[in-house]
Image (cartoon, rainbow, N blue to C red; front, top):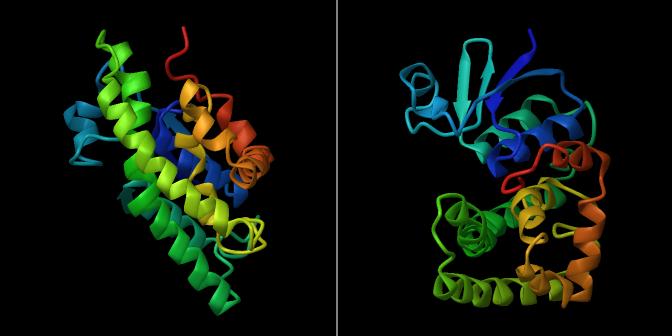
Length: 217
């Protein structure tokens, strides 16, 4: 029985899981959820995710929500197919993947997410971006990226000289950021920019990015 993924292709959380599934070459059925129609807030969807958010993954009788938990499940269940995103056969490398997954979750995402929200979601609702929020979080992101720049002087990717789930988790939000003037925080750091160009050019993500059209008319 194929996995079922409920979500919206344009959403950062859904695209994260889609990229993971493509990297692992896992068969799945994608079931679109119309966010603009509020489908994710309807009772039938609330039975899958009580928080009314996408994505949701169904694997037989198992239902999962929260994108990072879903990617962890996919990479744990499907260790051998596709690309090895967790370095599960090498304990020390696997540990470093976990470290940088946490860095993305606890350091990178809290800085970048408010910027993307202000630049994309606010205008969609007819609200002008709050420049104070943007400036504050760009400064936070700069500090995080200074550490990334130093880290990437020692290894090609964040966890080592191998692409991993840690790098993958950065893709969706950074993709949207790079379409704005805030892209300068990436572009002005040569190692970070080279890393971004590398990970965003992977076939799995390029396929997913075709549907990441949030904010486009």
